[in-house]
Image 1 (cartoon, rainbow, N blue to C red):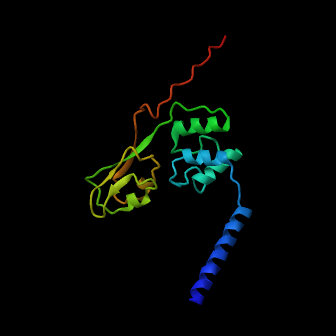
Image 2 (cartoon, helix red, strand yellow):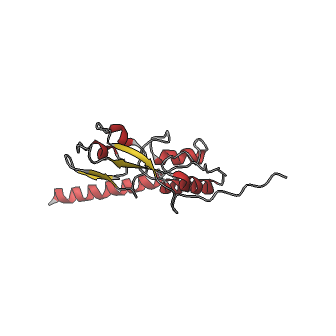
Image 3 (cartoon, rainbow, N blue to C red):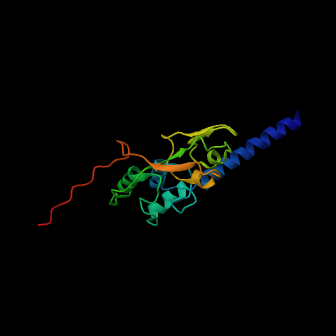
Length: 174
């Protein structure tokens, strides 16, 4: 009974010490970084040149990475990040959204594609048919790089209301 009481008191004291230390050594983060990170796809794919979305958001706030630095976010993310940072960016007319497609007749069901997809956009089981969930796919092309049968390709999606931006009017030169 004494040993149980001893360990309960020891646990309470250590918990109180850890709680106090977490308050004393707390690191305040930039709320702008957290807002930008919440907008990003969150796949940690590294196609922007950073290790993950958190590091990319920090680089955008520092000015080391352009608001258009995330190729998966497209024009929507670029515009939202630019508004948060208070900078202006030009959205290219050729900003194309890509999506992966699988040629089922060539797919052997090896499973490499759905293991490579950081967004879980490919569903299927080993030695079974795989398919791509178009609404989730960001077109990062990581799955096409690991497919041994070359049955994965990326195709351009036609613009829709979620990805198309009306171009800004050009002022006529006087």
